[in-house]
Image (cartoon, rainbow, N blue to C red; front, side, top):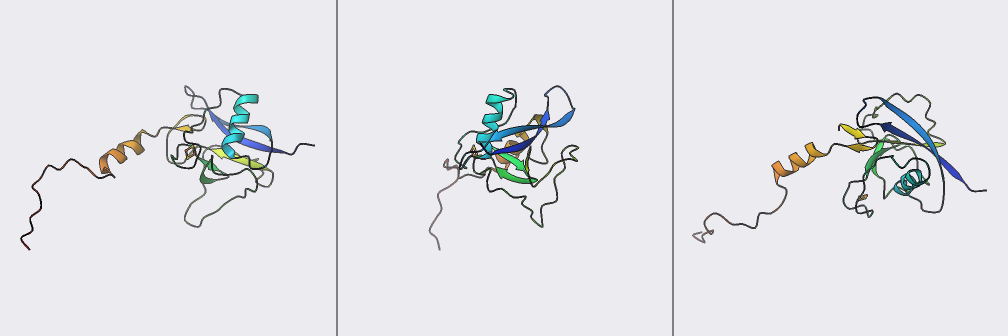
Amino acid sequence: MIKEKTFVIFRKEETDSERHYERYKVPLKPGITILEALFYIQDYYDSLLAFRYSCRGAICGSCGLTINKFPQLACKTQVEPITVKTHPRVPELVFGEITDWDPETEILIEPLPNMVVLKDLVVDREPFWRFYREIQPFIDTEFEGKAPTSDL
Ligand code: FES
């Protein structure tokens, strides 16, 4: 018998502010990641499920999600073993009304916190990129001033 895991996924339509959760059963294989489970759900249950990813190698950060109430990378996090992580400085994140999630048997997938949800698990990252551009966290190779002197 194939082992399965139930995923509880946050859903929200683009044009609707209504939020809800849906459950999907995903067959497990060794090493399957949360991102691969989302692909399975998209392929076999609902092709309209929206989520982001890019590198699939834990580099770009675009697959960041709240997994079992803890922000993690979906491409790096394996379905098993997964536990409900807690951190003393991270308050429990509340997105929608979920009262029947069983952390022992189900994996809860929600969008990243403190961001506007556009659709399902996709959040608006524009504020992040705006701050990124403002602080310019890179070395500017265009030298516009005078060359340093060696008067010391
Ligand atoms: S897809 Fe790039 S970090 Fe996960």
